[in-house]
Image 1 (cartoon, one colour):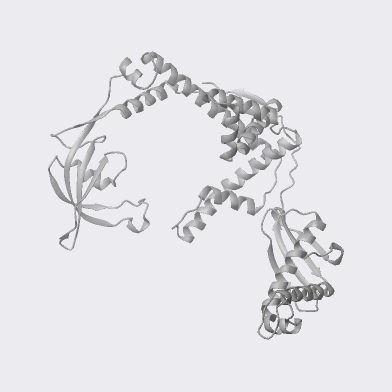
Image 2: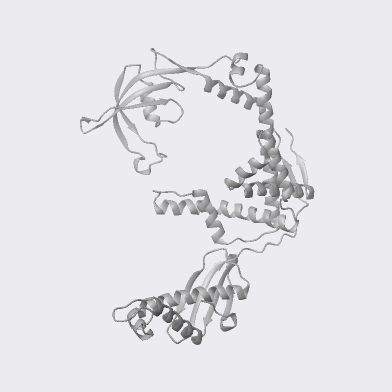
Amino acid sequence: MAIEGAELQISVEEGERWRRTMNVIVPSGVVSSERRRFTGELAARVKLPGFRKGHVPSSVVEKRFGQSLSQEALDKLIGAAYREALSQQELKPISEGEVDNVQYEPDRDLTFSISFDVRPEIELSRLGGFKVERPAVNGLEDKLEQVLGRLREEKGTWQPLEEGKPEDGNLVGVEIQRMSDGEVGEAQPYQLVLGQGDAIPNIEEAIKSLEVDGSGDFVVRFPDDFPNEERRGQEEHLHIRLDSRQHLVLPELDAEFAKSLGEFEGVEDLNEKIQADLEKEAEEQAESVVRGKLLDAILDANPFTVPVSMVDRYVESVLGNPEGVPPDKLTEAKEQLSPQAEHAVKRILAIDRLSEIQELGATKEELDDRIGEIAEKNGDTPARIYASLQKGERLEALEREITERKVFDFLKEQSEITEARP
């Protein structure tokens, strides 16, 4: 079904946040013509008793399928008129159209309105002259100790302790039975490390009061911040038995330990590798802060609004598919995320607009060079890396990575970047 643009009467209303409402009038002559054509098409396809296929009179089709015929013809008319009106007005919706105010009767003008969002037109007049401070890199020595401690814990072994009461950091094996109205439930075995939040505080306190092979009856209360709101503040009677208690024995920080982690000659070599990784990570974090501050300065200097539909899609991408979440909780989560989502969408659009007006998009040569770097690092061929990225639908992400780097390199040249004191 095709409708000539000259046959339509169209007006467009501009709403807030790039919302557009298009009012359309389809002349009665077009409505009648399309209705007859659609009825004829149906008559050629339908098969009814007493008539040969393709020879059912249109009047019979109208009488037999009148209501459904009207609805289907209306849907097709609105769809065709909508597409033609968009083409005539040179509008490109970024959200699904919402049809309203439909007035339709055979042999009369069809009128309807349809609302949708369009992509925002962003003007960025000020791109530089900002002062941004790069955060200092501090505390790497403490982080080095933390990494070494974590690596030793991963290589540690659990050793049993027969005497004494459990402490934080101990791995305990317990059996817990729920007691209600004098009846004791089935014992359920659990293993947990104390002090890591594996159990509610009252249960951990109860376990710490026992010795191995000891047991006791306890009344525990669920904390006010317990994830399951229905259990908050509730009390439960439990019988708890402590079956085992173990503590973690850490390996010595020596050459043997270093070699167990990879091709390291000794502790000094291991420390240098960890230090280099920490410095690289800290530099990347500092660069991320600079980028964020520059973008925020751009947004403050060049304010613009974004469509609600873009924010909603971003929120949905963050939440994923939260099955089983009550509708009211889902609505609450969306409301909480909306401000951050709107800011994130503005950042994305600003980067896209900057790359467009400054012609900073990733080129084919730059993409090939980046793929070559990845191939060399992984000991593979560029062709295989390209095929893998294409199969995993990650080429676009790589192009965006290159584009964003070029955009931020440009922005840093336009502003003053100072280094914070350590």
